[in-house]
Image 1 (cartoon, rainbow over the protein chains, first blue to last red):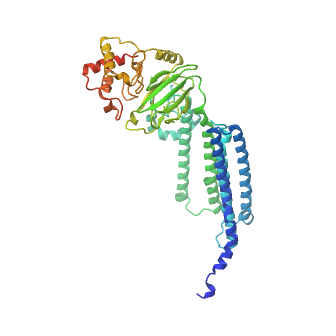
Image 2 (spheres, each protein chain N blue to C red):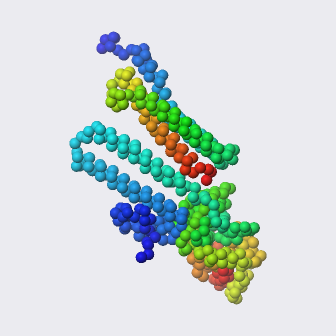
Length: 135
Length: 337
């Protein structure tokens, strides 16, 4: 192996830098799901157990928050779907380690996480619609 | 033809084939303490949920294994990528989401039912170690009717149960009438039940609570509303006076041995509240919270050796009394109807 063939640290760093900056973006949809969960359980328990707020108002606020969370997740999902590019290129997996492949893989992962976050928010919101108050 | 109590509701009876496989085990689901032989509205809801989930699970299990068999034994060659993908998306994402989502909506829709308000009667039950302190509060009552170790319900009416515990966590459960609810020291929990079929069922503490947890049970009697009203009116009366010479000797012994320090018998000087109220113990169908029957020998055994029957019980043994004395005491208590 000659010196020229050895991988160069700087080159690697440059190559990965672009994706490293956007890597955290795949966590946004699950983070919205987590925040929505906290908001629902926190506010509802303060309303029902501590009587701090009227339950009916909290319910409406949380339904609105759920719609907002779902809209945000749909937005993120569509963005990552475009980044993934499967609909346009027909390529679902990205087995080569090129920057383009990494970029599309992150889109793929973010899209699947958006789908699960969307379902999570719906399941967490279900009691708001079905149960209503502090029963 | 009389409908078997174990039959699933007619809405799911169409799945008879799956049931046929289960027939050998169904014989065990009848009885006084079975959630599969519901005697009330709340238990019926749970039994339906159980049958639907069981049949659904059997269908899914069969489908999965059938698919497995098909792909590994019948059509062994490689599948096209499209088939594999749709199988994964359909069977791995869409189907579970629909099934779990449907069960979630159904579960949530029946969740508030066990907390709905009653038709007037409220029963306050406190879990003790290891028995049940029971207070009946009819609508508009200023003071409760005190009882213990059995609970009676008017059929067809929704009764509210307010539950708490004296020392440790217990759980209140009458499987034939509804779901269970935990009882906590220092915190009230709430449950409402609407029994529909008159009869005697068995309740059982469903949270481990100490040495005699197993022996912490009770009879739940569902009565026709008129019979219930008569029974409750009788329970408000003071205790009956001893009706025989033996019972009179027993009443005297009851006082002399200090039983009244722990047990109350209304209409006498005995006002203890440590143990169960004995004012109408002769009208109950079990002794020592479902531990024994109510025969003369059951009473005698219990008075002489409570600890042998219920490990850890607070009541001391009275085996220092002669057999005759214990027999007299038993006669007195059995006469308290």
